[in-house]
Image (tube, rainbow, N blue to C red; front, side, top):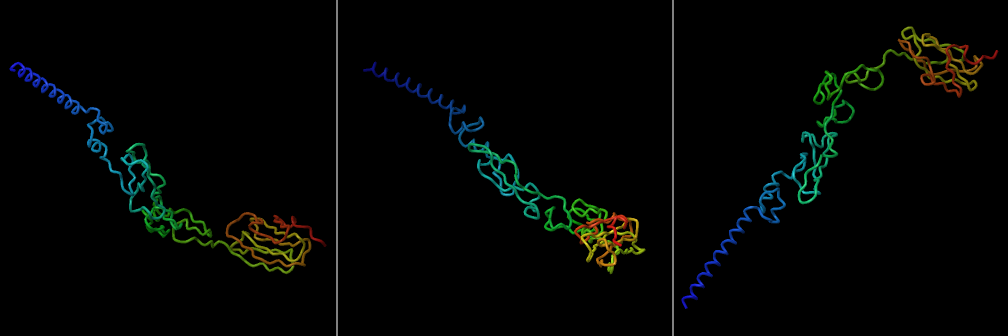
Length: 283
């Protein structure tokens, strides 16, 4: 009976030692970062909740952000505006869109696409390019946007040489310059083959608008840029027609009269440099 008891005690001791070794091996494997599925998705660290701590530091972003590279969920999108937020929705400025790029559980925000930001202001064009809430006025040196119209600021009117009568304020004085070097006079000639002279204050022909009646299909206007007289002839017979319209003259020499600057109402308009180039007059 005593031998049996000793054998049982030895067996119990060996079992205890074997169970302790197995437990220690399991602990060693766990502490060494063994094959745990949740941890394998991390970047080489330990498993479990350590995964979110290592990756989730970046913000997913809010509307209006334009940062790239932040962690996000693939397939999501957000509004973006990479300029001063106060200008978004003002004038030409508008937000764009960022898409979350990548595959799997986590991605990164891509570039901001479609956004329009502020630009140099063009005064009095009806468009708010610098997104300050209003179109800049081409005033006489007043400020416009971030620049000064009087000093040629990049956001305001930039003065250039004024061109009169074109409806544009090139010199930024708030108005288009009226062309005051032109003098126009009415033409009322009873019987054609006659001349009209420009006044001495504006001796150079600039433009005209002529109506010949009756006569044939031809109407002739003869002039030269440096001569103050303009010759009018309807058809090939004189003293039978009527010539009406306007003749405008300038203080400075102008280009020769053409159908564009001096339209004639006849099917065959003739613009000559001398009356001898007009149709031969019947005797």
